[in-house]
Image 1: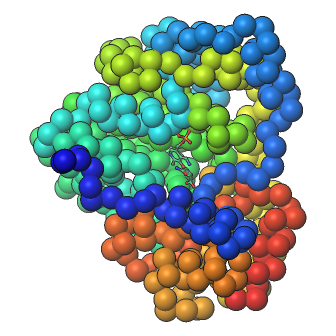
Image 2: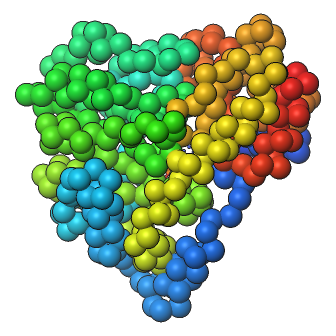
Amino acid sequence: LTPKLTNVETSIFTVMSVLANKHNALNLSQGFPNFKSDQKLIDAVSKAMNSGYNQYAPMAGNLELRQAIAKKFELLYDTSYHPETEITVTAGATQAIFTIISTFIKLGDEVIIFKPAYDCYQPAIELNGGKPIAIGLQAPNYKIDWILVEKSINYNTKMIIINTPHNPSGTVMSKADLLKLQELTNHTDIIVLSDEVYEHIIFDGEQHQSVCLFPQLKERSFITASFGKTFHNTGWKVGYCCAPKELMEAFRNVHQFNVFSVHHPTQKGLADYLTQPNHYLDLSEFYQEKRDTFLKLIKDSKFKFTPSKGTYFQVLDFSEITSEKDLDFAKRLTIEKGIASIPLSVFNDHQHDDKVLRFCFAKTTETLKAAAEILNKI
Ligand code: PMP
Ligand code: GLN
């Protein structure tokens, strides 16, 4: 028996959520809202089920949904993706990411990733024979060192994966970052995978810098997105990706034999719901209020922080509290104090000893108050 993926641990999201449940702790670890999705969306999905959307969706996704996604790009970024050839609905962003990587990455290909990195990138690269080239982002700003990126690019570099707003740090990439990426990849064969699942959760009046705003970058990029983040239903696992026609054709060659298509009534319900842009335009304000509530409640605690600029995560520096390793501290907080979080070193191959934990604030005010009460006593 020679399994292909052996050098991995159980995902930290599973580890911490299981521990939180076992000890009846507040679960601010794995990123999911603890409030309900809009009833109108639930009704739209159940209406779709009752009106016959129960057989296979087209392989690339329900066309009305793809059209609604195309409209969203026009409205938000003044750019177009053709619904028939350039947008594909996927089983969450995770499947899109895995399929993009397996569509292009072969033995020996190098893929640049930025660490701390969301946990599904590296295993997907390695399973396909690729070599992750990790570039570190340093707390508290987690800025990309473009000189290091330039030095890391060579003939084997096939892909660069970016993620803005960034999980786990809650930082965002600037226009200057995207321009630099465009300059470095222009006239190369490098594909950019831009994980933009938190595109609608960005704070303090900042604009999300999507790769599609930069024409030469758009040409070589896949964007991945997730309705789970946007509409408070992470368990539905519906997302999408878009890319220029030629790249998308290659993607669909793999996608058709991987999942073929995803849950049809959900797609039809989402298509109807997306006709009202306020359903995603209001999201930043909604989450900024939660961020502000949470930070105000813990401002006198011993944790130090820079307010999150996007995502629904806040990182807290605990260096004034203990010298324990972040994983040990996160487990102890869960077991002894009743609050679960995510240690950042896990997104860094356990190599960094930053004293930082990630807390998810996609929670009701009641939960945020209960969490703050615990954190203020530590
Ligand atoms: N990328 C990032 C940065 C994420 O945080 C997540 C989920 N939390 C995903 C991808 C995966 O999204 P999905 O649940 O739609 O698969
Ligand atoms: N993306 C979620 C997070 O960052 C977790 C998703 C998962 O559990 N795989 O917490």
